[in-house]
Amino acid sequence: MLKTPQETIQQPKPPATSELQLISHAKACAILGVSKNTLRNWVKDEKAPKPIKFGISRQSIIRYKKSEILAMVEALNGAADAMEQSH
Image (cartoon, rainbow, N blue to C red; front, side, top):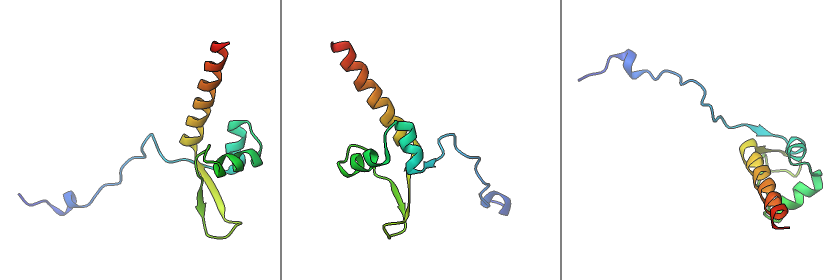
């Protein structure tokens, strides 16, 4: 069965509820409750998710996936709760 031209044109999809949201380094620090240097060290030590870098210079813009930062908050809170319960 042949498709009509109307059927072959792809209609734009509505935005997904799990859209990729990117946040700045400062916003990620605020959500985590840590300093900029602490988050930089965590990334370097692979304790935090790697940011997305837009460009190749040292001064390029970096952004974090909000979902990864929020998952990190949940993991940190879970670890803190587990430590409280063990004492």
